[in-house]
Image 1 (tube, rainbow, N blue to C red):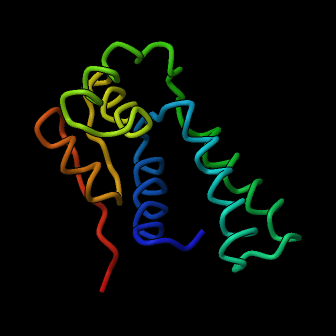
Image 2 (tube, rainbow, N blue to C red):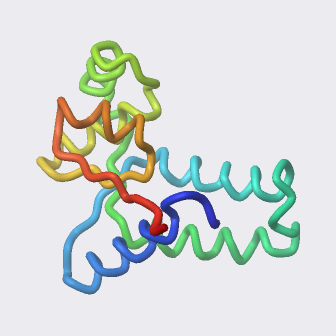
Length: 129
C-alpha cells in the first residue's frame, strides 16, 4: 500500500533480504497489515475490492519471509515500554522485539521511532522528497 514511508520500507526489506540478513517482526504485524488493506479498500477507497486479494498475497509473501516473534514472548517487556514511554501496547511490541533481538527497529512512524530512541536502536524511514 502507498503510505508515507512504505516505498522506503519495501526497498529496505528487499535490500536486507538480498544481503542475507534475518529480519524479525511481531506476529501482530500480519493483523496490522490486513487492517491497512481493509482501510484502503473500505475507508480511503483507493484500493478496489478486487485488488484486495493480490494485496493480501503480497502481504503474506513479505510476512512469510520474516521471523515472527509471538506476542506472548514480549508481554512483560512490552508492558514496561508502553507504561514508561506512554505509547500503545501495539507500538511497544515492536520496541520490545527489537530489544529482545538486540537489533534495530526500522519504522516510518516518527512517534514510534522517538519512543524507541531511549530504549533501543531505531531508525526512521523517511519518505523521499
